[in-house]
Image 1 (cartoon, helix red, strand yellow):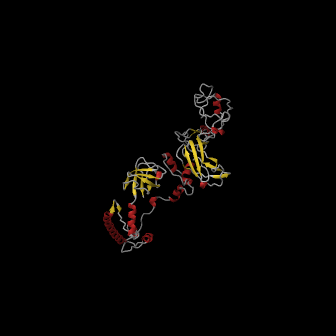
Image 2: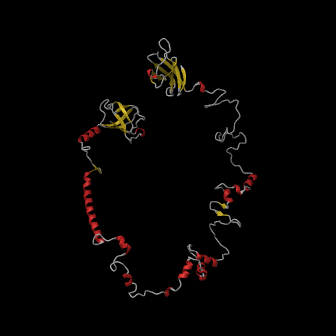
Image 3: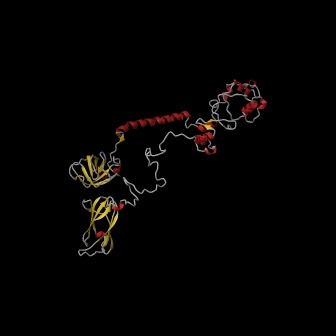
Length: 447
């Protein structure tokens, strides 16, 4: 009997001899009958390929599947030209070689150590914070682990304030904010005599020594071509209007346009002086329509009417749409009588003009049995809660194929098929093993 580690592959040589004990050569794998028993269970065929070595010796390559069960594994090899070869193995979870020795532990887990001698020197990074509990070292010395309430020394505080601003570069840090003259999240700026160029002051509550708007400032207002004027104080507005014409000279500015174009009093300009009634006859004569024939781009785009007028064309379209509406209403009154549950009902009497084909299709579909799975099913036994038509006798469905619906509850069974090897009058189907046991409520068809 040979020791064998569980789920381990091993190639085993064996000697094949005849009734006289002489080695037999030239045997091929196909001539062998190979059987295996696991943990005292029934013998079953085993999948393995036997190869010849020499002088009656052959190799038996056992796979992990052959050694997957703890206990006694028995292999029986028979051939017409040799005496039966029987091999036995004791399958262990571990072999002696897997056990640690006092002088060499290279792998594995040691559950409990009661006495440890000859501890080697601790290497760098051997102990980590994760491996030490927060309170493990309490009372064992001056350990600063998990401690609170410490304060910086005077020298430590001084070192913080003595840090060079060039070293404060971490984005978002308070040190960099101070170095950039910004305090807090409100972006207030610390202004000094030499550090305020380009700064933004959010709110000004008071201004002292206000010098008002100078002539140069007003000139800039009127010389601007892109600025938008908003509310001014009365004094400020007056200072704008008091700008002298001689100072307004910037090309394209609104001030220069007013100065150049407003060259006389509006009241001095002439009113309507035509021969017709002022504001009536001349204006009406200029409007196309009944007074003047339609001309121009709008008329060209609209086009001449197909009939006597555009109104006549619209009337013709309305007459056609009324006829269409009448036909639509008539169609809507006929459709409901031909609908079943809101759908069109169709009864096919022939396929491609062949009535026999339609009859054969009907007969084949009537032979399909539908079933719903009940509780207690396994991968080889399907317990049905209902079948249509219902089961009546033993082996009524033997030899048929059961196929699970594409939307059945168990996802792994969707579209899966297997053959029925037996059935009961109660609707229990014995099948070739499925990949997954059906659940109650799964649906399938038997064909």
